[in-house]
Length: 377
Image (cartoon, rainbow, N blue to C red):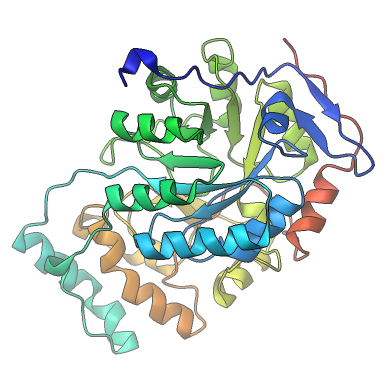
């Protein structure tokens, strides 16, 4: 199939939103086309929080649940999707990381990284890992695993989906959603033939979706991105970053978003796989202090400030994704010890106490406050 023969991206106008019935859940053209009851994507939170239970509960409640599959081997991806499909017939998304080219670390870099983390590992009596034995998941095999299970949606971060992969997913009718942190990235994604784009404001928790792992963060607030791009982007825009409540949702819809994506708000729900020390850190105060850092994975990501963020020498970092594997033993030991000092506490800038209810109760309450705010044409 030639690129010019690409199926036209699904038409999801952003201009209308309507009440869908007794629960007061809201529908946009985007959400109703996907079979959702409300314009909400529960963010993919790879590495633990995005359990099958959370995905199923979110989708059954009318939102789009998301499997964070970036760190899963192909067989585990198939098994996770199969478990989800066995428990819900509602649509859900699977999220992958676009592979990031990197230069393997030099021996000098490895020795510096080992030296700068020695004091931390000594506290847990850990034998340091060998970064030379880094093993990266094969993206092509991950992608093939996803396609073999035919989920409704495939979302991804860190760049455009390679053309051959995009064509294969289109053949199967899978809706494709990319992630942009700047107008330039959004325009590139639109030109590639996607169905929708998640605009990730600087407020968003977790990994920044910046295409170039070494580039500085554009640090563009979500509402600024929406204002600049709503007239330039012809496919649906999904708003992500700092969205915590119905007022935030309405503001994003008014600004031109077809839907919102929320992650932090769901981290304390009963179905989330958030570890004990991570959960306690999220709940201890409503004004969670966050910043972006590279120390956990080698890529910029936003999380709650903790000891490792403050004490790790940024000059001793290995490239992404090597750094992510290099710090995995510290994160695991910290969680086992009940400490949040060395955990990647991904969290957005949104303030206020987090709900410890079920995901379904949170979704119901978010969309039970009256009709949708009017969205300007």
